[in-house]
Image (cartoon, rainbow, N blue to C red; front, side, top):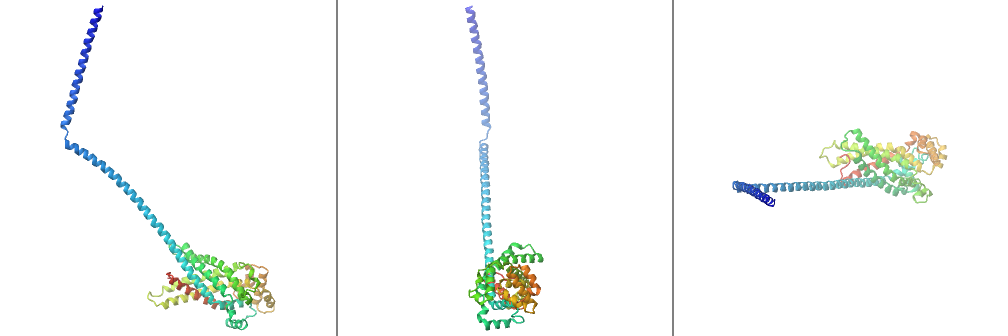
Length: 402
């Protein structure tokens, strides 16, 4: 049994050795075949082609990298260009705003100079006109020259300069605000795309009204002081105790006078100059252009005087301090207008409104003093608008209507 077991073990060892040998032979054959295949592939490969393949791959990779770099540069350039274009745009907008602000300031300066000089020159007319409105029973039937002569004889030449300081200061401020804001509001309310004449004129009127509303507010206290100075020489010397009254009590009357005056005079002047300038040849002499301004200003003065007369009369009554004497004298007068003025001044003393005063004065009473006011307004508007356009040109701006 032991030999059989030993014989069985020997037989197993023999079979195992044969299996191992077979496996080694099979592995050797497969290794030889693989080696031969690799050798054949290596012998069949062209070296230049391999180099070209590697070179092509490298070039493609470089091209991709260059394309990526170029795209980055394009994006960077676009961002830089956008930033560069944005900065000049912002700078141009700021420069444009600065330019427009400069134009408005120049127009305001020209308007302030024109309004100041024109009203200072018209102070004597204004004194006579105000006195005629305040004392209609005394000056009934008198001419402008007669009233001026009487004032000089009774109060001296200085009577014709009463209210000069208040006039110069008040109207310089008012003129600067009126003309400067008028140009500003026109630029804001009237775009260049609006060409319909009626629409443009309406927007111009709104611009003028808004500008004068601001200017009249600033003028109010100076105008009230001027009227009181004209009413009494003592007031001009600072001896009138009424100077402590509220300076803005007559603000509504100032609006009633100044807003219609400014709207109609500015629009009339602008339209007339625009029409008349187009009738002139480009090589027309300077005198022709000055003639256009004078003629247009005269037309503006005529219209402005009529439209603002009711407000001027109301303003005079509101700031008058002689209502009691007028009430007494007016009752003895046969003039219906004088009686209405006396009644209006008495009503004003009781605190009547502008509407009530206008109803008392009626149409004829509201236009009291218009005859004397025509030369006054004519002198003011002629000087004001001619000086205004002359100063505009000196400051580098175009004249109105051109």
